[in-house]
Amino acid sequence: MTPRFLGWPGIVRLGLVQTAIGAVVVLMTATLNRVMVVEMALPASLPAALVAWHYAVQLSRPRWGHSSDAGNNRTTWIICGMGVLALGATLAADATVAMPATPGLGIALGILAFAMIGGGVAASGTSLLALMATRVAPERRPAAAAIAWVMMILGIVLTAATAGHVLDPYSPQRLVLVTTSVAGIAFALSLVAVRGIEAGTVPVESEGRPRAAEAPSFLAATRQIWREKLARDFTIFVFFSMLAYSAQELILEPYAGLVFGYTLGQSTQLAAFQHGGVLIGMALIGLGGTLLRGDRTIMMKRCTVFGCVASAMALVGLASAGLLRPALPLPPVVFVLGFANGIFAVSALGLMMSFAGASRHSREGIRMGVWGAAQAAAFAIGGFLGATGLDATRHLIASVPMAFAGVFTLEAGCFLVAAAIALRLGQGGAARPVLSRPALQDVGA
Image 1 (spheres, rainbow, N blue to C red):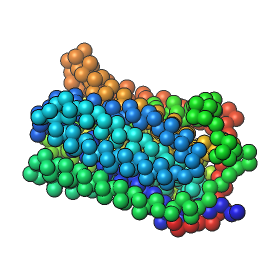
Image 2: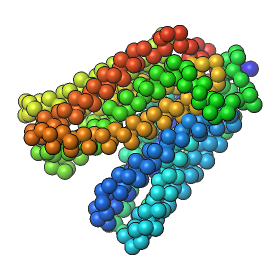
Image 3: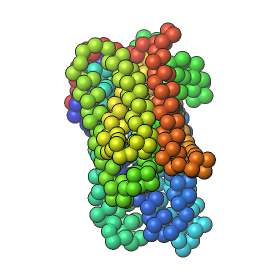
Image 4: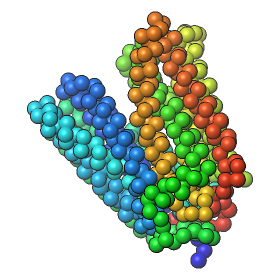
């Protein structure tokens, strides 16, 4: 049978699942964080620990990926994961409301809720990316990666803006109502997005790939994946690159306030420069990767290396801005950092989709799971190390700009290590990705 790939409408429909995930997660990591610390005067370490816990639970991604491989029905896992995510979000709001009156019960419910959130994101997100890896044509993968990222950001922005308006003035009942509504809408949107989409396309099966019935156990499949040099190297690349990518998130706005004297409003507006650069970088790679001729895998690899090196240079510029102020203004540097991050993020995701089918063994789900677990670990460690590293450096160095410069320089070093690893990806006899030749009939599912 002629293999058929998703058309643009189908790719956008899968992007809607990313929108739904982003919409729910932003309430958990931002809104509930703010409510616990400000409105309820709880220790800031409590929401930070819950967010870190939800990342830790996402280390289960390889297991979910293996299940989606074995079941050969990834949409089921997407729907189940989104259901658990929606229920976990609702429970998290209830737990937050309960914390002031009954701290023990509230915290216990919060731990359970954030475990459900992490598990839901792991199951739905891993299965979604595995589905995209097997059903999106190679020449459309850069654009598909850009669409997935942009639509996730869209869900975050729209939910933050809408929920922020509706939650004012704050009340516990309003918090529960808004969270439950967003979770319900996100789940319903996911159901509509994936309905019938997997049945309308046929993944390419390369010679020698085992059927689902012959699939090995989870531990055997994990060992098999880890023996592949390409999968192992890409896991290390994902960890170092995402460590650098996430470490600056929690210290950028404090940097603007402590070193440049920005007000709260000005430092918040600074995020617009960064996210504007991110979106432009993503759009550039998505459009260029679709229009340009040639091997998309090689192009995405080069763009990934460029994005890592450019991000490292931008971080060095960010460190220098504090030492050279006011000669080097902060907003343009932050915009360049966002632009480089956007190029890196979309290229790396496109490369991930390409490498997911790089072996004769059809294990796209577990590969996505292993790489997703590396990303989750990097995000959990990166935010913590960025903040604690800054505290330690400020304790050792009297100059605040120098302390920030030291942390930003270390992050730049992580990006350079990731670039060096990316240069070697696919070398040493690694299998070339399957589906490397565009040929095929589109389905506008």
